[in-house]
Image (cartoon, rainbow over all chains, first blue to last red; front, top):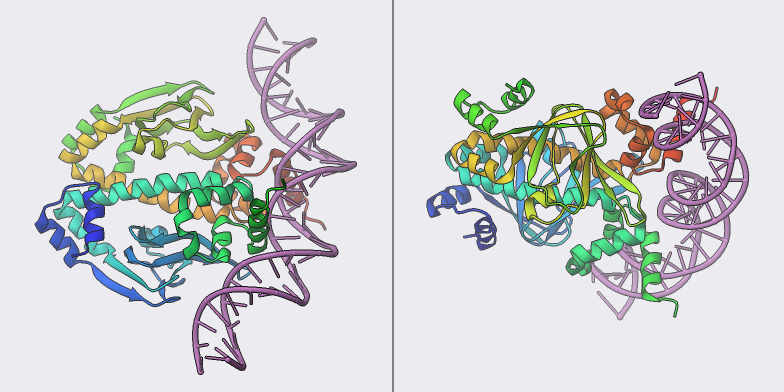
Length: 193
Length: 193
DNA sequence: TTAAGCATGTGATATTTGTCACAATAATTT
DNA sequence: AAATTATTGTGACAAATATCACATGCTTAA
């Protein structure tokens, strides 16, 4: 059951078959059509989500009505609004499916109950969060570099996802306009002799 | 012993006096003069640090030799290079004291040993990381806003630290030049009519 | 207290990126 | 397949921010 997730867990910790089953029993599988929402702004985010198929984007709509993509989530990624999850305050983000998507979701309270009985489960979530944190730490500095460098960094890290994403989404993730990304791509493609 | 840290822990979890003592026994207190380094680039970061007095900055030196501040660390903050800590690869960051500073440091391996015997300690570090993560999540979007908005956001969050930081450091943290910050401050100070 | 070294302010100008408008192309729905 | 809708490309121009140069002022240490 849920081999993608069992493997992900096994990568970091050892959990007994029984404990794994009680964790799996607490998960709920959710199917999303393209453009459907996993989280909408104004809602409190009470779940963490593990993508087993497809992909989602997490974005904010700013005061000028423009969408700013904070993050993507594809297979093997946990995704949630950590701030809303932690504080119980309404989320300012939307999490929306980019393609037909399947996720496993776990409720915060349920998960924290499980942490008491299964310390290794907390170890797993802690390690996953450390990885995510290390990644965000890098993203901060990338966002301070030029548009060209940001795009290069993106391709380096997420090149394999490039054909599953639209350019406007990539641009938004990079914090530039779609027009700028378009120009940048064309320049890169035609290196002047 | 270390009341600042005990209080910080008590804010999130309950740990027996005995467990607290074995944790404290694993800590090493480090004193830094102004400009001294807690971590230098090229070194593997094997410690997490809790600032009990003073302040530090974590920065990268980019290819053009410019310093980019990722983060500050003042009283009550844990600070480390999470990427180097996690992967064991040499750090690209420097962590340097901005003023005379005292930190408590814990070694990664030691800490992970303690997690086995004191699950609540892992709970504590996990919660602290969640808070830090939620904060970084927000920082990503702030960095995509205008210089004026970034500065306003900074003052909102860290206004109380403003007089302990130089403007070039604030500018670097905001991802703008010191000249731009200077202009921005003067505009804000003299609202036309 | 004086010199040396940092830190900040400010003008002139360059660069980068955004904005707006519209055309062209691709994808989706009926 | 036609019609509709979404996505991408491109030009002209605007805005934001960086760069460079130098002046001013503040700190610190002999």
